[in-house]
Structures are given as structure tokens and as C-alpha cells.
Amino acid sequence: MNRLLEAELIYGRLLDISEPHLIARYNKALEGFGLRPTALTQFSIDMTGFSPEIAEELGDRDYLDPNRVNRRFIIMTPEQAELPCVHTSFSNTAALMHEFFNANSRAINAITIKDALYGEIEDSVSVVNDIDDLLSINEVRFRVLSAEDMLGKAGELRGLVDRLKKVPTAWADDEMLTRMVELARQTGDIRQNALVPDQLVFRHEAFWANHFGGVYIFLDHKTTTVICDPSVPGFRRSRPWQVSYIAVNDHARIYDFLASTKRLQLPQASWVEDSGLYQHRADMVVRGLINESDPTADLANADRIWLQTWMHRYAAAVAKDGAYPFLQEMIRTVAATGTIKMQDVAPANRFMLVRAAPAHPDQWLVNRLISQLVPRDFVSRFVFDKQGFYDAYERYSESFKAYVVATLTGTYLKDKAAFRHKLYGLREE
View 1 (cartoon, one colour):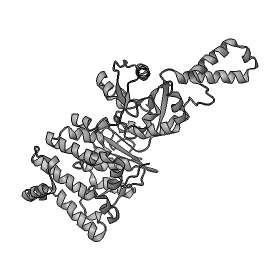
View 2 (cartoon, helix red, strand yellow):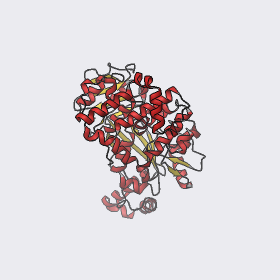
View 3 (cartoon, helix red, strand yellow):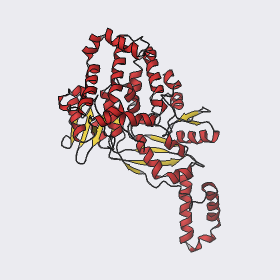
View 4 (cartoon, helix red, strand yellow):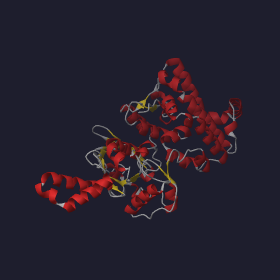
């Protein structure tokens, strides 16, 4: 993983924590979780407060994700809202954290001046044993504490202020007034600074969970659709009267579901030609074939002439695989007719020709599923399914790893928003 670290393709854009008072607050949060405090004098954190350095120190990557449900968080600063979420068991953890930051920005801004927030994103289950446990998660509640007990002190001060207003004799209680002054020195004027989060309950929308090798759950008005390996506990047995189950290798049914629910953008020249997505995937196919035939090949320095020479020399292997000729034919078809008749395309090939509908709320989740079904496109896998990308990266040859890193740093990392918009039609919010 050293190449990924150096290129900031893993644990990139994290926030450095090195000031002693911030480390002390983080340690109080760790102790609040029953974990030993860190001895590190510098570490980095993501949006949720997860630190790869502390995970290594504790020997537990899931120190903020016990049982991979009821995710813990540590908020040191409002700046965390702009950070990535680099380690999670649910694809919508980042979205839930964004909702929490947005709904409670005033409180977070005020509290983190003197304190750190920590707690859990509480689901309705404490452990996931089968699909039914995942299906039972409809909403989450943020249980919030503070390292320096700023929330508790603000709550106590609020109660004393209310007593002062309502009880005529309270002004004569010198002990209470002294306590109020002491609390106000620590919390500031709670009439001006909202120190208690306003919204703690949020909906748990469509998501991917990394349990059982990966489970996709899509929610529609009256139905729920689960896509996963059919060997997962509860498949076709959990709530069969209200849940539709699709095996992750059943390309035909997955395509029909996504297309019928308007989650796919089907081939039209208007976006296919502008995006360059088909040519991108054709290039990914060829380079994947080269790596499979010769893992030592220096693809990082292979130019267009070298690639054409290789394809001519290994034309039989390219034809037998079929993906490259298929994509070239589809490029010609779109140019000539403006569209593609998807019913004439083999189900296994359809996902090379589509992308998530950019306007659909589930666009990121759908693109994640597509990237899993088109595994040679490691760029799309990195953009939408980083854990799947990292797992695949570990199996690449050293030469191919160098090419992958060079490709991602030379394309996607140069301008992420522009790259995502061009290839996938995504617009940044």
C-alpha cells in the first residue's frame, strides 16, 4: 500500500491532529468508549474521527466500528465535515454524518471551540446476523456526548437559568448563582451559543453494507430490493412478502430492476459521445488483458502505438475475451444510430454501456454496483467502491500497481469533480 499512501490514494485529505489540547480531548473520547488513550503526539482523522495511525496503534481497524454496526464518531472541529470517510461498514455513513453536521452546525461550531463531541450512530440492531437485521434499520439516532462534558454543563446551566426565571426566591441562592457563573465561564452565554444539537434522528436510506461480502439495499415506495450473494443468511427468507431478492451474479434481473426504476441512464449519443465512457472502458479492458497475459508488462510507459501492436499480435486473445471488440462495435453503433437496443445486448455486457442516472438520489450507490459488475474498470471502482478497489489492488502485480497509481494520479486526482462529471454525469452539490 506504500504507493497508494505516497500518492494520497488511500487516507488522503485527512486532518492532522497534533496540538496537545486536541489530543487530550480525543483521548477522553477514547476513554469514554472504553479504549486506551493514544500515546501518539500526531495523527490524522477522517470525517468521523477515525485515525489510521490510532487503528494501527490499537491493533483494531474497527475501534470506531464495533460489530460493524452502531458506528462511533469523534468530532474535534467543524472542518471534519469536508473530509472523506475512509473506513466504514455502510455506504451512507458519510451522508448521515453530513446531515448531522448540516443540521447541527451552530452547536458543533460552538462546542468544538472548547470541547470535542463523541458518541454513536445508533441503529435498531446491535449485531448483524442475517439480512433481516439490515432490513430492520429504518432510521438512526445520534447519541452525543462531549469530552469535557460541555453538553452536560450547558444542560445544567440551562436548567439553572430556567429556575432563576421561574422561582422568585432563586436570586437569593448565592450557591446557585456562584455555580451559574462558574458554568458560564466554561460554556459562554448559552443564550447566544446553541450548545445542544438540534436534530439527532435521521432516515437510513438506500445503502450498501459490507456484511456477508457486501449487501445492496434499495428502497422504493412500497418495495425493498436486496442484491447480494444468494448464500447470505436470510436470502429469500427474510420478509419475502415485502422484499425482492436478486443474486449479485444475475445480471439480467439487476439490469431490469435498475432500468425499470429509472436508476440507469441508458445509451444515447448525447451523453455517450461527450463522456468518452465507452472508450475509457475499452482502454481498461485492453490493459487488463495485457496484465493478465504478462504481469510484468510496463503499462505505465505504453503508448498508443505499443498498444496497437500488442492487440495485433494477440488478436486471437482479444477476440476470445470479446469485451474490447464489443465496446468498439457499440461506439460505432451509437455514432451511426444515436442509441443502442439494449434488449439485443447480452445481460453480462449491459453494464459496460450504462451509468447511474445522474439525477437519481441513489446515483452513487448504483455506480458502486456497476463498478463491481465491470471489475476491469479500476478507475470507476476507485471512485465509487474504494474498499473493493483496495481488495483488488492487493492482487495486482507490482508492475500493474505502478500503472494503476500513475493512471489515477494523472486523471482522477487532477480534478475529481470535472472527471466525475465528464465520465458519470455527476454534478457536485
